[in-house]
Every structure is written in C-alpha cells, then in structure tokens.
Length: 196
Length: 439
Image: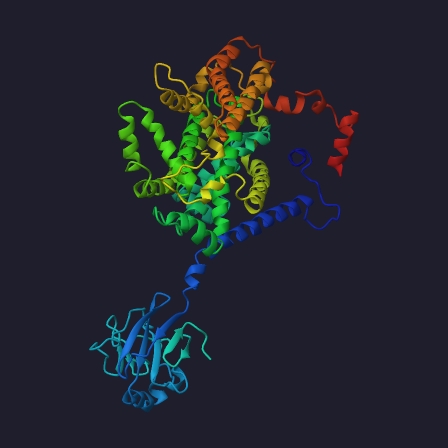
C-alpha cells in the first residue's frame, strides 16, 4: 500500500499549503472518519423509525360512532386507536352545573363551550384516559362512582373530574383530553377526523 | 499479547486509568484490536474478510433484533407479518428486511472467502488448529441459523426447506424417523416447528458471537498468520493493529458495504428464490425445490447418491454431506506439509484452484433441478471433493518439493524481491511508482 509505505518511511508528508500543523494526512483522517461517522448515524435512522406506529396502526386512526341511542344522562365507551373514548350526552342540569363554575376555580381553565362543538353542547366527547398516569376513570357506565363533581372519578389515585370532564381535585394536571372529531351526521360522530 | 514487543496499554486520561484499574476492559480491547496487537506487516487483502465477517454478524444481529419486534411466529400469520406487515406497513421495514435477507448472503460470501483464504495459506496448520476448528464450529452454527431463518417467512421454499432438511434425520435407521418427529414437534412442519425455529434463530447468533470471541482469542495466542506462512521473528515483521489494520479493514469494509448496499437496494431478490413469495402450502411441493445458494454445493453432494450400495442411497447422501464438513476438522492432520503458504507449494497451489473450481461446479450442480447430465457431473464433482482431501492432499504433502521460503517476513517485504529492494528510481518500472509517491 502506498499509504502504508508512506507512513512507515516518509511520515512527514507535509501539505504544500503550509497551513499550520494541518498535514494532508490529518485532512484525510478527519475526512474519512467523519464520512464513516455520518454514514453510521444515517444508518441508525431506519433502526429508530421502525419503532414509530406502522402504516396499519395509523390506518385505524378514525372510528365512527353511532350516538343515536345515547339518551341524556347516559354515556358510552368506545375504542379509538386502542384507547377508550367517553361519549356522554349531558343533561341540562349537568350543563348548567358546568357553566356555573367560575374559570378561576379551575386548574386547567376551559369552558364547556370550548370543549364541545357549537350547538351540540350536550355531547361531551373526551378520551377516557386520566391525565395523571393513564388509568380509565369511572363514571361513564350506569351506576359507577362519578365522584363529588358529578363527572368522572379515577380509582387509581383519586382524581376527580366535573361534568365537563375538567379536573377539579386530585393529582391529575389537565382536563380529560378532547380528541379531534366531527359530526358526520346528526347521529354519527367520526372520532379522529379533523373537525370543522 | 502474543509478542514481547507488543505495546502495553498506557492510559493517558486519568479517567481511563481509573477505569482500567478497576475493570481492565480498555486494556483488553487495546491488546486485542488496538495498538497492542502486533500483526504481520505483509497481510494482503484476503486477510480483510475476517473483520468483514464480524461486521456482517453485527448487521445480522442488529437488523434481526429489530425485525423480531415486528415478526409473528405463527403458522397462520408469519407469511403476512413478513410480506405485508414488515414489507409495507412498518417504517423502513422493507429496508430492514432486505438488509437482513441479503446480509445473510453477504455473511456467507465473506465467510467462504475467509475459509478459502485459510485453505490456500495453510492457516489451519500448527499452532492455529483450534482457530480453524472454532471457525468450522462458527460455520456450522451459521448454517443452522441461516436455515432456520429461511423457514421463518413461511413461504413455499421455507416450508419445503424445513421438510427436506429435517428429513435428513429420517435417513438414519430406526432412530431417524422418531428424531425427525421430535425435531418438528409433529409429523410435518407446523406451528410447533415454526415457534422453536424462531426461538433458536434468535438464540444462535449470540452463540456464534461467543464462539467468535473464542476464535479471536485462540488466534491471538500465536498471532495472525501471513501470506508467506513464515513465523514472525522480530519487531520489524509486524505493525500494530491500530492504526494500520483498523484503517485497512475500515476502508475495505466500506468497500464491501458498498457492494452490499448496491445489491440490497437494486437487486434485493436476486439471491433469493421467487417461490418463497408464495405462502406455505403443506399439500403442494414447488416444482423446483432448492436451498439458498450458500447450501448448493452440499445439496449437490446430498443428491449425488442415487443407488443403494450396502446402505440406502438416502443414508449415503446424508452421511456424505455431513462428512464433507466434518472432514475439514481433520485438515490440520491430513495436510502434513510443514510449509503453510500455498504460494511456496507449486503442486498444492494447482490442486487448491482445482478444489475451488470443483466447489463452484458442485454449487452449480446443486442449484438446479436434477437431470441425468447434472447428476453425473455432481457425482464426479462430489467424488473429486473427497478425493482432494482424502487422497490428493496427503500425497501432495508427502511428495511435493516446496519453493525456498524467505528468511523472514521483513525479508520478503523489503529485500526478498529484487525489484522491491532496488533503490527508488534505479529501474524504469519503479520510476513511475516513485513519482506517485512524491506527488
């Protein structure tokens, strides 16, 4: 190898440009190692992105729900992206309770109107995932403990949500998340679709 | 550390010193693949394939672990989990799968070159017999791993490969069929076989990695062999592994990776069989059933026994196939010539190349559907394979007169050849090279 012979016999092949201390060998060394380094990092990309949700998981990102049978005061639990979603038909009393609360009393201030679609204020649709550590709160099913605020109660660590599913007491930091959804007909909701 | 002049590890950074005193891992690495491992200075490019093999083992383990995150080892779902889920749905799944598939082929390519390099340069001879034998153990483990990996996509070739290869065991009288049923966990390949193949396919690469460590450990006791086969005599014969051979191995690995990338990106299915894209069907064997290309020579030996002679032909084929590899374990004692390198053995050298051609012919014979002409050719080639090792090699090593060996490695490098030894510029042919160095 020319390179090997050079290093053994003529180690001081100084660059002709006389740049202080940077020999041609140093340049080659840095260039080669950086090239290999960049290549190595690029090669990591497929190993990392393969962990992200695959196309078949993303394909399940919307769920259609028929809400025609949900009477005021009732709620249903549906599955969207393998997560529970609470669809609740609020009674006028519950709506009034939610609207009576001053925003200053809330940990995560939001009005019921902000958490529902215009003209459909009785339809409260939230993820059934406690914002504390991900348990499923009670309160959607018939006869379940709804906690002192009449919304949801998380049995894991005692987070309490009101009738607009806003956090009122307990360790959870945020209100139950309202997912993207839209009414595709008066009785059908598509959860996961970007609403208008 | 094989030689007295090997540089001892001297940590420069206080943290490295602190670590080394408590766990001498940096010392171990330095002595094994760093400046502390003296390597004969005359290694040629054939010596780069060991590191390349290690590289492909690493690629296979990394891509394999990732693929196992998406693969389903169920007889009903395996085919779709590979050909639909991994190839279409998983992010970069197609790349990982093709990289793993072709990585196996490239692992075998570099290992075959590595093995034939050992055969030509007599790397199996004393004091490196154990290096050779551990290498053969790695090779056998690779074959088992590759076979079981090929079963996992559960295509037609996977399925019938599993059927045929476990069928080898049924050739043995009395115990054969019960062993086959035990291996499969059934009467034909099914869920039980698939699950255990997946489990073992995940396990064996780590066993290979462990044997690779033993292989390198055993190698580092006498140190690497070299193209002259002459022992290292003093410091002038060697260069430290780092930076000289890390640099050479580094650039050469990059060159091999380039070829690997070209095949993976532009001809990912060239080395595979199209029938494996048909889901496994236990009721229909494909018209042409062949293993992956790296098993073709052995498949030819297996098929070359067509007539019962004392034992059934089937048993002869299986015994011949197994012994074609097992006999390599005895190679250090079959070839008794004290001269290692084929470069100094004019007769051996010719027979070596005949063996290479013979194995290629066997590969050709094993890769196609059997017909009368192909059968005769594969019978002749199989016979020659055994003739080479059992008759020709012992005779050659007994009667051959080797060429005079150089006095030392540095002698062969610096003064052995007149042209090399002549001062720069004294010969017209050197003049051109000299300008290149000056430039």
